[in-house]
Length: 230
Image 1 (cartoon, rainbow, N blue to C red):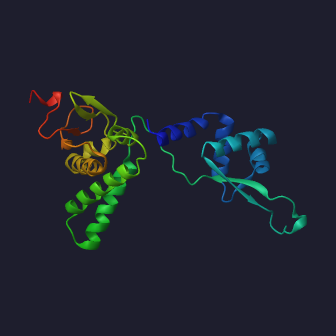
Image 2 (image 1 turned 135 degrees about the vertical axis):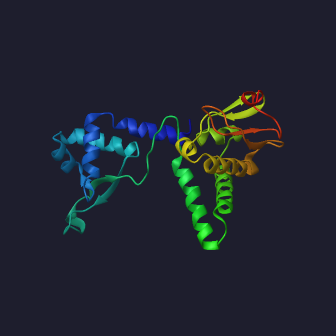
Image 3 (image 1 turned 180 degrees about the vertical axis):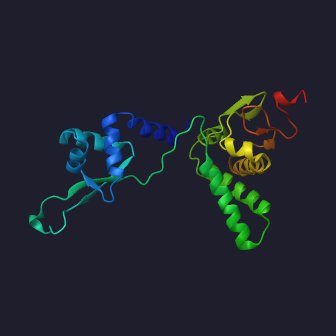
C-alpha cells in the first residue's frame, strides 16, 4: 500500500464520526471560509467540540485554515485574526483494489493534446505519452526498487518463477471496455518506467491472464505459468 493511499484511507475514515462528518459537510457547503463559532451554531454542538473536530479534519488533510480579521477591523486594536476553515485543495480518492483512472486520464489527455498540436497520429502520441508518464513515475519514486515503485502505483507486484506478475490493474474498468487501447498504454507506461528503474535483462510484455494486469515483467521470451499450457 502506498503512503498516499494510506493517507487517503485515513482521511476518509475520519468522516466516519457523525459530528465530524456534519462539520465537514457544513464547511464545504459555504461560499466563504467559516469560523468555529459559525460551524458550532450551524451543527448544534458546543464550541469546544467544534474546535476539536475541525482541527482533526485539518490534521487529516480534509480542511485547511486561514486567518482573517472581520471586515472593517484593522490596526493595533483590532484583535487577533479569526481562525477560519475551508475545504482542502487536496483530492482524495479511495478504491479497493486500488485504481488510478486519474493516471490514465492524464496519459490520454497528453496524447490527444500532442496529436492535435503536432499533427502526429494519436496512437503514436499515446505511446510516447505513456512512456513519458512511466519515466516520470520512476523518477519521482524516492528510495526503492522496481517492486516498490509498482506497489506505490497500484500494480501489486508478485514474484512468480522469477517474473513479476502484476496482480492488480490500476485501469481495470477501462481495460475491460477498451482492452487493446488500455493494455497497449499500460505496456508502454511500464516500458518507460523500466528505462529508469528496471533491472538489466528485464522487459515488459503483454501476457493477459484472469484477475490481473495484462503486463508481465521478466526476461525476454520468458512466459508465465498461466501461459505455459497455451
